Image (tube, rainbow, N blue to C red; front, side, top):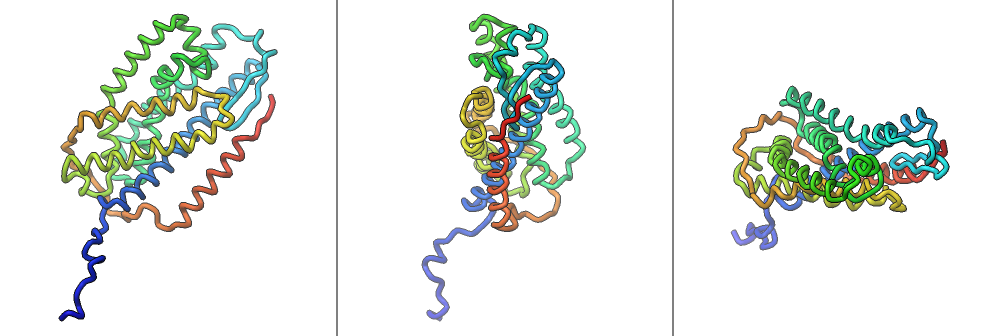
Length: 287
């Protein structure tokens, strides 16, 4: 019987499963891809809306997919109403759209987990567009911060309002924690508080950190500081880990393929797509 003995390496090798390190790393990578593309899409839409308004008001500017810059000679054409509309309307409309998308998601309980995760990231970014813009614009005269500083000239007033907004965001963090947990693809993540925590770390916190680092490349040469500040402000969700909440919930999981990446070629395709988008984002067109 000695010839049938199991090698020591095989005995020490942990069984693969959704809670294994390999699966959690793959889940984090997948969620990071969703966050990055969602953030790029939102920034693209905000810049497109800004471009439409600037063209309407006949303001000269330089357009890129993820950033617009203005020429000094256009400064005399600005009015206070234009500033509020041009710089303040985008994040506000984005948040309203996010709430609408969140309501639509209520009727998608049996949607596949990957679709749920995509929609959850989009809702999270869109709903937080306006409040996190307040946080990012408190000290930055850029993007939404331009309208914000025109509304409140006092740094103290802006700071107090930003603090109140942050408190509200922290209070709502449990809601978003629950929304991300609803995207699970197996009940294994509901067996213990530690499993829930592992899922949240894999599906949100690590992807947020990795995503912010990668998205910085799309902000080159860092002439626009508002977008990075906005992305960083989304990290308020990390506060939920201090409380170590336990969500008692029985998710409805559709029987489907549990694979995260069906092939390594898809990972390479994502990398190539991001490189092409980055190259396109560096093209500037004057209007």
